[in-house]
Length: 70
Image (cartoon, rainbow, N blue to C red; front, side, top):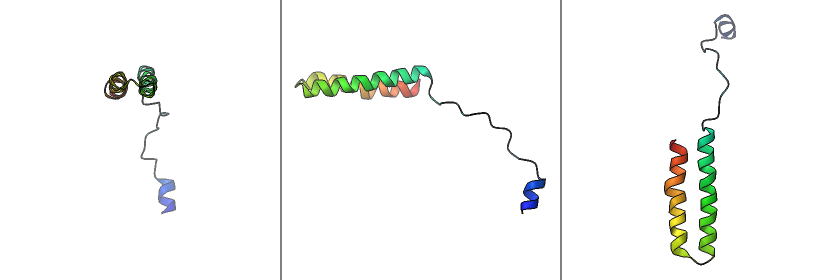
């Protein structure tokens, strides 16, 4: 078994170094989503539940999917 693995060539081609899956644009949108979520929770803590709901929906339902999809 060991001899066969030594004598046989490597079946896998050379693998290039792995690059990060998300581009800079994706990371910027995801960072904006995190900032919007923090602002939403701070708005909720300040006692403005309607405004906080709009801000949180923007963060969770618009910016996060956009940051992943683009």
